[in-house]
Image (tube, rainbow, N blue to C red; front, side, top):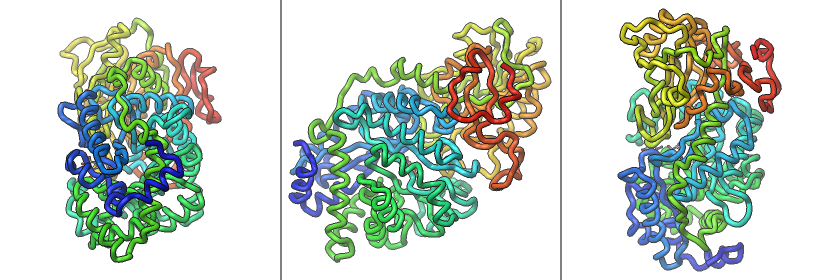
Length: 601
Ligand code: BGC
Ligand code: BGC
């Protein structure tokens, strides 16, 4: 069955109310079975951050997704199912997939063409497993680095976010000929990056919320801005991604001046669908509608009437189906609204070509393919920002290096959150190349001791100390003072004692408050969360590769910068020293800042 506009109308006309509500329902693979997908004519299944099959291999993913897709094909009308996932830096749940740098690093590069290439590679790896919908790109404009999702946003400049977000949508969607490769989903509409510290309050009826006790201080909070500023800062990425053809958008957990986005008819319907002209469907976030009211029926009514089209009800999908059915019967939700929601969902499925080909099964060898890894290595290398250099860089080709810090040899720390698991992890969570591995492959003379002790060996002249944030995602990553761990500080000071030239390499989801370490080190590299491929990082140290990255967020001078819009940072947005061969011709689309004049090349 193909489905142009007329076909979609005919299909909507032939659907029962329960089939329509089924289309509007998205359940988690951890809860729903293929048989239940068939029974309820479910429109979508997702894997949340922890929704991996076991064992976590591409082949097992492909079989699991096919099981759900085939179940949907068995239903009376055979409306195809779309499987959703957070492929937010590569197909990042899947063991063995290529992991690209998180968005903050891509913001440091600011290259739309690179974004398209990353989008295409990510789509290819997704298609190999049959997953056709990713909850990406995050087009938040993060304004406070205490936010645990700072790294998911490209940067502080709305135009940068708009430019890179729409390029990623383009890449994910594919070459424009025929069906979309995968469906992008810009998120979280709107103002998620503008929330105010300390404005998060757990709905008292919602007991799953805040299991970490002190997480969620700014994530899911209240964005307190007048409408002109909300539009100027947070709306542009939606205008650009809709113009790029986005056909799904996720609503934000956050509020705007006290009103939750999930129930915000003005912003979801009048502004996004009306004014911006978004023709696709709005999906709610994970249990997002539950936060609207203590009375669940009321949550459903408010969300759908506000303009939510598909409801992410990971666990209690039956409760949603029952509540929506009651609401329509009672006239609390109009049939027109239901039809509009279903039409929007079917339009996106049709654009994916699912009516013709409900399932893709390209070769699994695409997952983690070496071409993609090379692309990720390029991105990781280009994202690194040289904050400071007192002549420690470049390191001479034959100079032995003392390498310290656990992060120098830890894929999990390199990748951060949203990698294999929701919160990420430490250690060899998935295959890849660490800085240590890369230095060894480049046959540098390198000694590694995570603790910087080196068993009493005489000190080398050059030391590199690699520090990292512990991985996190969402509210658990909210931090009153993002800084180095006590252990990393200890190792840093040991290395400072030991080495004449000390290079500080930082893996983090945001700028850190470490003015003492920055001033004590001879050179400082902010490498963000580079992903699985550190293979090209050694070239930066030796000067064989140029430093190209520029800060997408200001680097704080101290704690008092946090939450202070008038702060004078240590290094402003766009700062990044140039160094290494071809440094002069390094591609850059942003005007140079004063700091470039101090660069040595
Ligand atoms: C996050 C979304 C994500 C969803 C599904 C939510 O908690 O806010 O960004 O897409 O979970 O994993
Ligand atoms: C899921 C995430 C989700 C989170 C919300 C996790 O179990 O995997 O996708 O965002 O729960 O609590």
